[in-house]
Length: 390
Ligand SMILES: [Zn+2]
Image 1 (tube, rainbow, N blue to C red):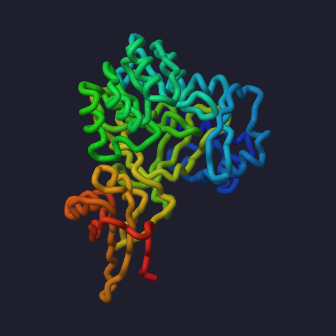
Image 2 (image 1 turned 120 degrees about the vertical axis):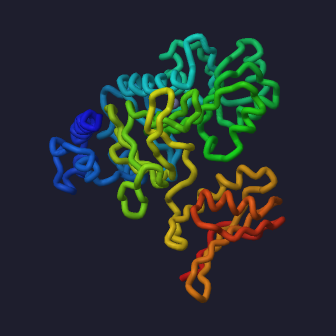
Image 3 (image 1 turned 45 degrees about the vertical axis):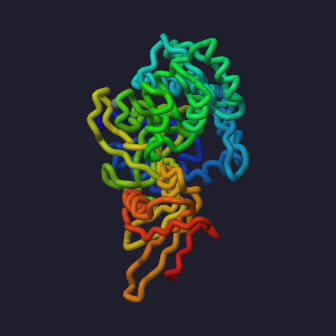
């Protein structure tokens, strides 16, 4: 198993090295693709970062472009719209990987699938569409837009599978959408927000709720199956590592860290030890569907901003995920870090709205792994993070 994956990675790295961007990475550590004999060898390849990759794409676009490219999507970024290139084979491989994930979710060729993601500019709509066509389901390319149009179409065509942002899915249920047996939710935090699935299940009744993780440059990365045991990593499509964002070292199974992905079979714009900046956990589980490597919940933060409190890494971006599960909070917060006279770190989270500070505190402790002081105020002046220790 392990040697199979090494073989696949080696072949991909060999292909990648035809492009100077990737070759430079290996040269930096004096590595040749054929030297990759173990996963440890592979892990000596320097990471690529999003900024570095996007800058290279914009600067040397023509060097990434190949004759075999048939689709150019765009993805928003701080540097502007980034071209997302795929060859015909890339699209086939992506569709097949997504199709296998959605089959594990319970989708069959007898399903009628309504997709509410956009089909133009961005990748999502066409990407989902291709996967369901691969399965042989009947797909409605509805696209985003009005709730009333979605309801009207649904009444006529009776979709059984809905592909949507979880918040839009909730809205559609409130407007009377019925008969959905599987919801595939993407584009927003879902299983990482406690209580969210329960709310959606209450709205739809007997429904399988599938959380999906992917990004424009690499999709799928992970997706739930019908047993809802967490998001199974698409190990036939990408190789996922979880690292300590500070040291770059791999963390243990079940430990929080930054998700790093590598394509296994990509012709253009392949990702090779790509730092996503997404904070998550990967663990080995035994699921009845046969999949093992799993993210217990979706992504629950970003690793861009990190503070050490009592020796523990704190990611402020985790806090909104926790606050979202308390409907009486507005979501606005301020995080303060101080040092007592004895030199102990104090973490304080001030949240806006109404709620039981003790309950919020215990949920924050579960997420942050440090016990914060929690203050609930009706109106907060000034959001953000204040580190007063130094
Ligand atoms: Zn499973």
